[in-house]
Amino acid sequence: MSDIYTKSKRSEIMSKISGKETKPEVLVRKYLFSKGFRFRKNVKNLLGKPDIVLPKYKVIIFIHGCFWHGHTCKKGNLPASNIKFWEDKILQNKTRDEIVISNLNKLGWKVIIVWQCEIQKKSNRDIRLSQLVSDIIDENK
Ligand SMILES: [Zn+2]
Image (cartoon, rainbow, N blue to C red; front, side, top):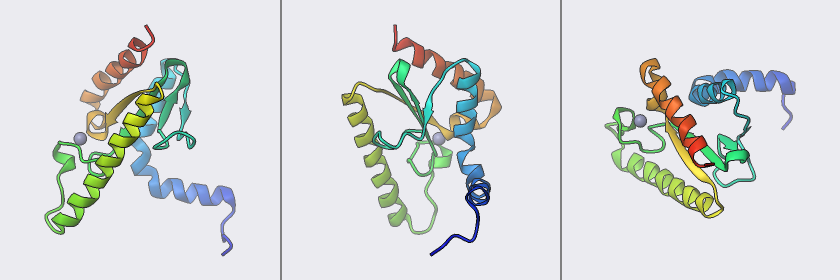
């Protein structure tokens, strides 16, 4: 099937659709960039396709949505209906996350998880992001 949109039009549409979803990632990337960090994003040849990879520090950062990755916060609460379905689904995701992290660790990467809820509010965000920076740098000492 051929695409009725040009490539750039298509990616414009896609970015509008997924815009809200990717915002936490953009926040983290912008912050790190402003602090002078240089990184690769959505690295396909690493397991889990990490959101942010800092080769210089051997650090990988995942920005996890609380719901999909089963965070133990308010946003990680399951919907009231179809509980079994969601439990299985989220458990699958969590298991996959654990496998991804342990494999990356074995390859020598330090993996840092930033939860969506940790950076959603401006008041928490600054603390979390400066913590992130020290986590990145510490590893290299
Ligand atoms: Zn959370």
